[in-house]
Length: 290
Length: 198
Image (cartoon, rainbow over all chains, first blue to last red; front, side, top):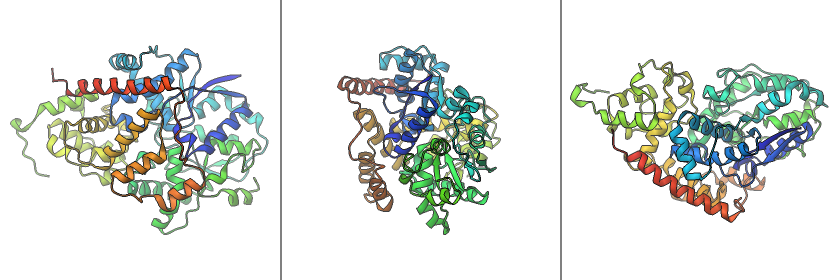
């Protein structure tokens, strides 16, 4: 059984509860053992790295050290947390001085051996696409999905590792394996406005609006994401964006584990899809998936 | 923008400071403009990233640090990924914000420093993000108390997406350790940022 240290992140216990629930359900089904890191602290998100380099490395370091001690790869379903964990690991590797300072402030030593993976990579590379295919109960025939990667799971290139930075394919491959159709579109890795959600909301409306418009134009039925921040910008702000653009976008945004959950035979309420602002029920009913 | 380029106008100290704190070689920039071309927020910046790089090279800290450029950087890292000179431009933008927030320059943005302070206080005191407290405090301090309350905020609460109870680290020893860690970090940061140029 695949054992992975699990860093859920703050959003997954509040605005993205459904992502946590769906992730745990799917991992249980696939027999991936998620061991939640006890007493994990917030990764610091964007705020930490624009305020202090040391804070940005020290906050994730605690979880990295725990994973290293217990000899497990560490994963987070949240792209922002994943990015901070990975960047802290890489920055400490590049800058021994930073590593020394982190060790001083946390009072623990880090040997730089933690393996940080995004949840998509744990599933597709550690667990394997073929093994996922074997578990599918229901093919998601006829569903056109726009895979939206956003910034943090693809950039910078070191984070992306063996996927392509400008045209990542990991989620598209997953979608094809589930029987659905990944559409070709050009806003896969554009920015949704991320951390500006509360501070510079007008920028978020513009950037997220561009992404939603493009997905609609390219014929997507829904947008699949792997980040709670992208989700809240694209989903919870969608009514405002629709008003601004004077069109009814009505584009459901689902987490990738929710889409996987559908293929594994879970239903609407198991995956907490009622939590979304844009209800995916009419779409999924019309495609005969629910 | 008119700027007379004379050797005596170039303040090397600013460039050296930014290069030391960001560990990036900004003098490598040859102004190809790829960063500005890919930047999703360049349209809202007073000076796009390419210009910011040139301004650092020329030591124009007065103009750059009073502009909105670094505050509008959304940290998407597109510039960093595409830079042919391998300058981590997003990190340079971070460094400008770090320097301003440490009090080295006057803050040219109100929203983000307030948000950062509240966000990090929340982590310092609870170990995690306390959303509703954070949003409430931010709205009050930014003098916009009803921002996003209706309909989005209300709907979020009704859907159980935001809870009134903070999710704490339950172990009190860990919490004290966390607060101590923040204290040590603050001390080290001050030393690092105010270190004199060698």
